Image (cartoon, rainbow, N blue to C red; front, side):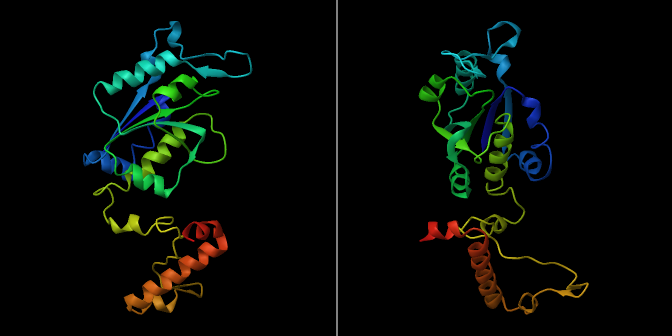
Length: 227
């Protein structure tokens, strides 16, 4: 999979993809992530990429020309399955969306800044708009890192144990059950006996029951989606 990212502050994305699972995925050649500086595509003096909004009002707007220059330049070499704008008013990102995007070959993410981007870019180039939550960030770079991580780990070969991703929270609209590891007892706190029984059928039943119970307690709204 190839994920290209257009950013005004590309330095913000250096660390998230340089460590752990994302680094291993890149090293294996399974995932390619490229970050492009929007300022490299502007023809305005002093690398300007934003301007005052028509009609007045506080806050600057990312200009249409640099963005279109960047998008069209990248499209010359790559046919994108989705051109995604990261914005607070996009559809809320969830596991289902991550699963869908993980099946794509090429994605282009555009990180918003200031008061957003010129609407004409959204009208004519953007195919999908995503928000990672009901709050406002200084820019879309953190959202881009979240999406790349959540999508990238689903690509076959990225995780050492691929079944791990299938049992994560939200995959089946349930939260994950409690997990334990050694030692079996610590300060008198014991691991549930069922997990030490070796009876895998009963263990799975226990895990399903715990997942349902935890979801009822913490995220009952997820159960409404199942119904």
